[in-house]
Amino acid sequence: MDYIWQGLRDSLRIIGSLEPEFLGTVAISLKVSFISTALATVLGVPFGMWIAEKRSPGARAIITILNTLMSLPTVVVGLMVYSFLSRRGPLGEWGLLYTQTAMVIGQFILAFPIVAGLSVSAVAGLDKRIRTTAVSLGADTTQSFRMYLREARYGVMAAVVAGFGRVFAEVGVSMMLGGNIRGYTRNITTAMALETSKGEFAFGIALGVVLLTVALAVNILFGLFRERSR
Picture (cartoon, rainbow, N blue to C red):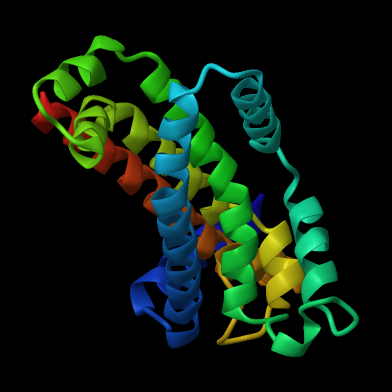
């Protein structure tokens, strides 16, 4: 047990010292996760709200697919994107493999079904008379969409938070598509796996503390948003 307590003490020292490598790893993780979540939000929320309004068998099939993809293993996404971006793949000439862009693509694929699927649930629970009333008052498509978005804002925000949590803590996509390159694609989760395998227990714990702190902070901010919006 002594090495655990020693690791905890050393991890606090690493966090307090703000070592450049430590800060760089955290910054890469935040950057890639925020970009991928933002893209998933911009595309996933409108798509989810549009699907929620449909009553066709095709829409129900899409919802089923989205719900299934919510639990898609990260290594499967990594393998799928890797096959496209590798030298022998159709997009190999773009040179995206082992870059932050490749990590964003993979994390976007993970986050999109979560954001879109939960947005469907958020809109499906709204009173359908909202849009009818808005149209009768002269609202155009954009205005009625904004009204719907305002009414479903809590559910949509929860979808975005869930999407961010999914990609921020994943390791399979980052490892397979980023290559864990020091100072470039090494993020919190891949660094934790590497440093722990090397016996650098304290560095792994320090990164784990940051991982949990960011997740907690995001959820606290979401809770404050809900409280102030009531």
